[in-house]
Image 1 (cartoon, helix red, strand yellow):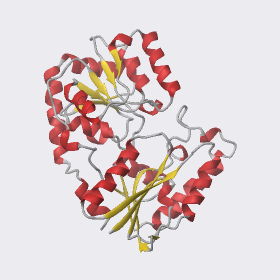
Image 2: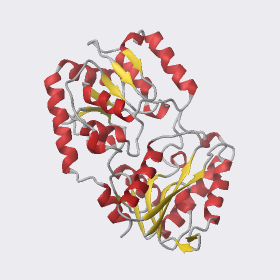
Image 3: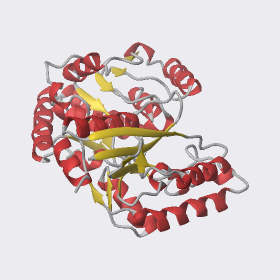
Image 4: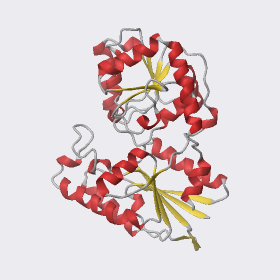
Length: 349
């Protein structure tokens, strides 16, 4: 089949959504399909610009390319999933969350402060409710995203999990003295919460962070927090690391920290499970809670510094428990049957 994958791209920003889209294209090609990825340049600020992007997507004609019919369009992200096509299937990474669950979030939303924010929010709601059902089938990346789609739009969908890149290369080695937090530095990932917790630990806990920052100001804030909390000697900032380095950091950690706000999917949890490492996450962290079994494959705690500090101390002191929980996590991943073959089969059915 000739397949187009439609997503959006913020210039110079690369995260899980971009890796996800590229992984889908490779999976399609590996299985003999002619697949390409279309990324629409996207700017969500000021909020009025969102309406322009929605209109631009609706005006696109992707039914054929170079005189050949496009057999299937797979829409991933708003507003690219609004592109019309007679044979469209959606695999929604997330909707525009500032118009939904993050509408009144104190730090992660700016739409609510816009003079036209309410009208823009309504336009997004109306478009999603009217146009998402155009698709022949609607999948999401997780149960959490499906829950939001049902709650806010009344639309049913099917969660469809996929493996992280290079899943077969993750492995486990003897633990060294650090927790690993590999997600990009972003307010939504709450590295600041980890630093607050680190200052409250009773054990000599160390944390290695490894990723780039969304915004230089947030990175500067985190470094300042380290100094103010006097934990800078217990924190290591690795910045961007290559895949081999990342897998080694997973393999040798005591456990993995992942404390985002209501994450849509997040490879961190799955990569830790593949590395046989326990995961500490928060009750409001979204999809990680779908995977982490409290006190069996990791710990699910309240999103407070004290609760997170207690969890880190627990695993730091009890290395045998950490090892056993990590092994259980690897078994749980295997039981889920996550594979690209299943994804491609569903999306092209």
